[in-house]
Image (cartoon, rainbow, N blue to C red; front, side, top):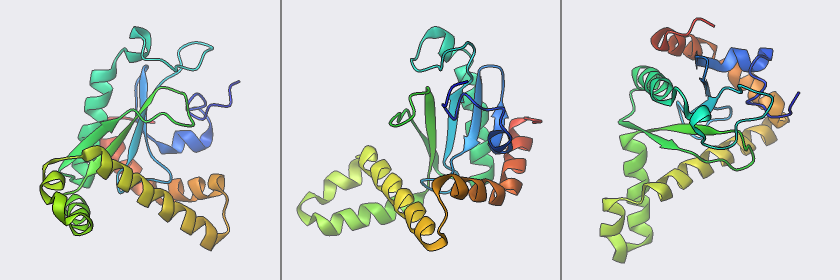
Length: 181
């Protein structure tokens, strides 16, 4: 059995996190999240090998899974939009991050950037969403590290605690996505 956490979706901890699943894809809330509603849509392993490349087999069923996961997130969290990013760093398993974008968070970031770079004001009013995503990711990582330091929990313990605290939200997401567990 592989050590990939996404390949081991039938473990009790992972099962509790899933809010959408079909034979090709599954969605979980990220733990710890970058922001409220941050989710991961990952390919289901369909052979002995971990799916690491965007082959036709791995991408099979993606439109439906993406649509169902985004619909559930929008219904529960009410973001202005959801950013889809394939940010595969430490985990090679083929997956996407679904990062809700909230108007107030983006506006606050843009205003902070204007203050830092007064001569480039217009640049930040027009875009640079990847810089904003980096900001959201860094804030989430800093928040998670601070919580671990304060609580004395390791990453695995922190994830378990987060998943337990998300139980009611996961149930709501499951109802919207049609996943019965």
